[in-house]
Length: 501
Image (cartoon, rainbow, N blue to C red; front, side):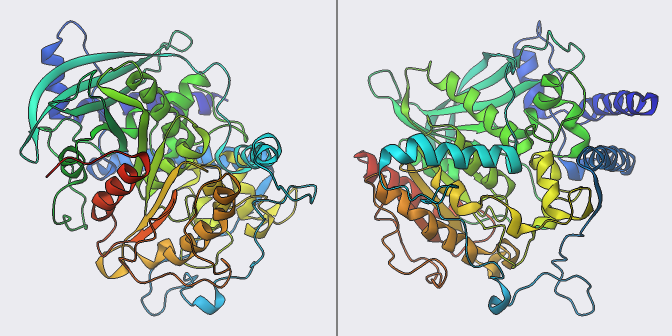
């Protein structure tokens, strides 16, 4: 017990040092604007940590991961798949489509656990949907506990600026989370609301909340991602402002750290008063979604925002978070899910690229509930489990968004949206979710092929005629290449005319 307390204390000291050392320039400007309210420095991107900080983070993550295995009675997990395709690699991921579907019979979105078919919207809302949502909460993403502390929002500064040469008003936001239950753990949500200069109570605009690494205000420095080329063309933010939309750049790291070492801090740690999670509690994906919901609370108080037309967006792990957020927060009107892979829009039952075992590893397990580790277990008190034992899968997560506007987006491997993500599997899952849109009186993709044999259409094929949409662009690991298509699709579905560009 003493070693656990010492580890938590050491992590907190290290965390303070890391945060202080890597404060963002933007935060410094905000503090100068309100010097009477000193604020903790923003989290550093993981690639900026020192070797010592990385070692400490890895050790504390491993300790937390081992503790969850102990709680679950797991003695051994299977290793994750190796995505390296070079000759001589062991435990390589499968990229042979002929081997991709060892478990071809997915749980039916419209057949309950009792075997009864759901044939009416009322049966979906009252029986089948709650059943699916409960399974995801229990086994995959975790439950948000009762009594999560309240958030009070502050607009730290409001400035005129430009985005893509167009005038905007940008508001720097801080969401102060009540930490009276654990004063040593401070959580402050960070974001920026950026609106076209003409937005007003008389002309409110739709807004897209975007999970982002940093560079929140228009003039903040944008983060650079080592090893990834800069996308070409207008940014997503520029496309949104050009279309007369607003956006919120929201920092997930300010809500919950993207590592297992941080699970005793952030909103998860604050709610647990610094203790480790139990198996059914929420992981980072749900925590990031909770932060997006609290941001939506703030937007509902702003007369310049059309609060009934607020959406959520993210790419990669943040694409997973965007889909999870949409599934569990009914107030979001639309979602853009970018290159989300497994844990998002790609079925966990698919044997292609990433595997369940990658998500149960120390690299990714913090995204999920502790219970999810059971499905990577090779030796445990409860026996062996794998993907076929999961009670729900990605197509049912997509279905929880119905009948709202849901756009699944991918790029192409040649530009960096790796085969690892299994875009074909996501296409199949999107088709498999479609019957729920139809049941609820909305249009799905409009594809008649069965999901089990359907082949993904060529890139830049627009399947945008319904409230469920699919489009693979010809860019890389990003969704800005689909942003204009997404905006026009949403505007068309909600009857809004996009302004002349």
